[in-house]
Image 1 (cartoon, rainbow, N blue to C red):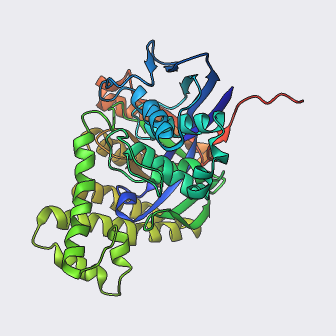
Image 2 (cartoon, rainbow, N blue to C red):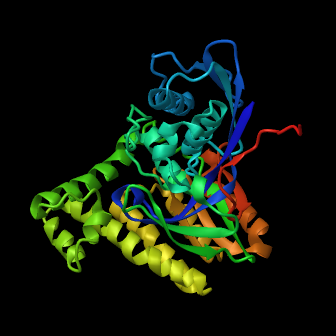
Length: 402
């Protein structure tokens, strides 16, 4: 038996920046997804503790959009494509993370499933694995490619789950450290840790799940992918105008001191591209460095103001906020949170608030209560948790002493 746990993540800042080559400020949660692989005489099936059905992982028939099995199937199919036939097995998926909550439960299923399958089949010592997956950051990028379908070096791509996102979620799950926030740059193929910020002992994150699902393979897929397509259109226009071959906006910004101004001028006549570029630049180049500085020196007032700016920029520049997430962010601030923001892909999901540790439990009760008074239709699906940054993926299978 092989069992791996992948945490969910909080995207403190970094709304739709990773796939465009920008920065993110991220942390892992203490809740997540566990994938357990056991040997079987034949076949390959997956089962979720939360669902009655089983999924035949080798059945070519497509599953419904949004089905949990899509994520396990993507991991299984990609590993077989890249490393050959896997051993017959059964995969059990168990989660302490609300599905479609914006805390990247879907990516956690991919990560936990892929790692459990890889270790069960001895793939991590395969020369094809060791030649390409040379660091934790490279592993995170490969697993992002498993999800989005892209190739990774010599490891060919496949369909994935239909998203066109980056590796922020997977980087948080693989690379996070307990009691720390990490600033990562996604400019190059493999992300780079720019800095680490110790999370103050006297603070806690309170997270409310709005109860509005944010399924990246469901109805929000086209909206999610539109932001990605706009980012690709910006870099395509840049490369056409300059003769360069930059892979993303982050690489374009590294090309020279005037690159930001040149990019802005280049797309100024296209309202959609100009709006998307401005959101990216403000979030990645201005807000995240400033917020990281403020948090490191304990200036929670400045940190909160910059997070407020990020929330506004997402609403105006990405169009990915809904009434519920707007309400939650604003009400958290009214109730005294140092900072509050929606996070993840948007179009539903969750909002985090930063509060003092002694106040966290009472704040959680009051914040959720106020939200449900305004949106009683979500009483059965909204929930709240209190947490602080935790570590990344880990092997959780019992090991018998020999």
